[in-house]
Image 1: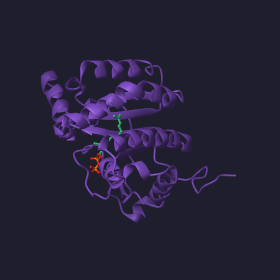
Image 2: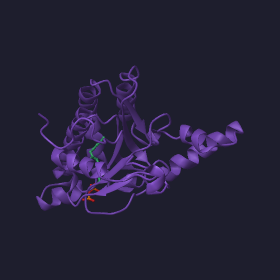
Image 3: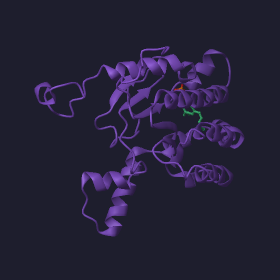
Image 4: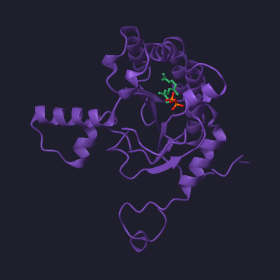
Length: 242
Ligand code: FPP
């Protein structure tokens, strides 16, 4: 018996993206340092990834650090890098054992060398996997991603189509996100997957990220299941719910 409404045959998003906002406020409310919020956030991120794959989602993209976040105090950034140093490889190995390929997307050259090495090694271990993926966005900005892709095309002297341009983005070869979830009460995309989000359903939660539970993820997916995705067409043209 299924323990929730997401039963076989229900409309599941293939690709879910997460804007994990609210770690700092969650920690502050508990009189704890922001780094404590990020640690809880990382644990929640892994739990949600595992749950999403168990539900049948194929791709998950998480916004772990934006290019703009690099301007945060050294202490906070150091805490985030330490989380990667101490836990990333082990956590990713656990999730990716489900046959999931890891991609780190963003300008990782901006990260400390030892952190870059951990990311490279973790990705290499999953190279054999196809069909399921995790994208961890680090030092990521969507406009920078788009400009980078455009520059690759210019260097190659290529005339672009929407498909060939998509292939040049960090997410090339993957389906676009169907559902983008943002926690932390804010209602914006914050330079995240702007091209890929063209037809995504957007779900905003008032919960701070460390308290966004597996059940909250299920609720977001159930909400997604009730959306009618028209992709610009009319209801009559669709004939039935997509
Ligand atoms: C935004 O919330 C969150 C971040 C800038 C970091 C997100 C990182 C994680 C969830 C875990 C770490 C994962 C990796 C891979 C390092 P905020 O801290 O800005 O919260 P606030 O809006 O309440 O201040």
